[in-house]
Image 1 (spheres, rainbow, N blue to C red):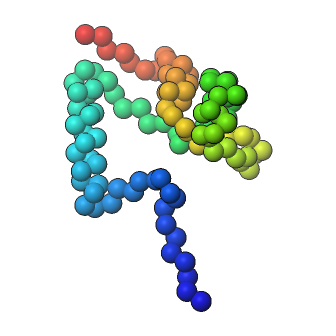
Image 2 (cartoon, rainbow, N blue to C red):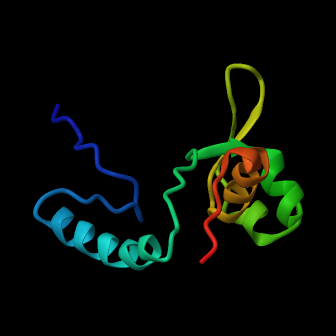
Length: 105
């Protein structure tokens, strides 16, 4: 019996050479002006507590009902893969406000 080839999930992009070189070029072209303006990198978790999204956008919205991948972790907590970055970014800023340095020009 032949083994079935395991592929990336449908709709998920992979950036391996040589395509990754173009991805890096575009990413850097977009990041460079933000750096020049004084912005710094924020790296967010790929999953968050589900409540962050249900409370932020409402439980009956399309994002929550159609676009979220939610599961229960080993600690019996509801965890959701990040459907977008706004809620997580705001959570991170609020929780780390006193350690974030803001540069005004």
